[in-house]
Image (cartoon, rainbow, N blue to C red):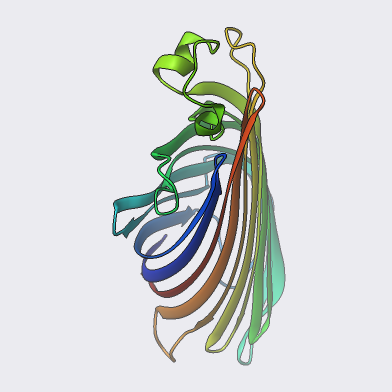
Length: 283
């Protein structure tokens, strides 16, 4: 059972086209709290085990929020569980570390709530999205090679939920042709898919990570007869330093994210490039 807490200072360039182009530079302060539970023998240590699990043995939950000059700028809550799957780990101790590898294949369920404010560049309001992940698959590989270790994860899931269409502002003020749910509440129900992949490399004192996210939601409301599509893309790279005999990690990261939306014939997009300095502790 692992808990983590992180705090970071982030410098961001935001560019929004909705449809007028605008850009701004701004600083944010971010906090994140997370936990991971892996009820699998030897998950982070030496073990020789293989078999199926069916008791929700792998789960995680996290909450992150960023604050800037305009207040809350970003919020993300995520909860995930793998109720059943297959786990194998063959790792033995050697001088200076561990040697071996482990794999996990699992069915995965989840829920996520997102909120982001692009008003540093243009007044778009707080863009919110909430969805469940009723059907998904998780693959994880953990390799131990003495002083070098790596963790690779790939998660693919179907999505269903509601979101504020990012193309709404570009549509214009005359909304009489839109369905009532879009006129009054500016949201729709959508279905889609999400891909998340990550790779983390660790050697004594140093850690490097790569994270990639792609997500798409398309309107499936039978009362809405205009095309609505929203997409998210995110690439993150980080390098960190871990002091000897310490649970702390001091990390620098770069983040490139793109948010696009279509509502009928209107299109909007936002591009954010961020650089952050983070301090993280696991306990």
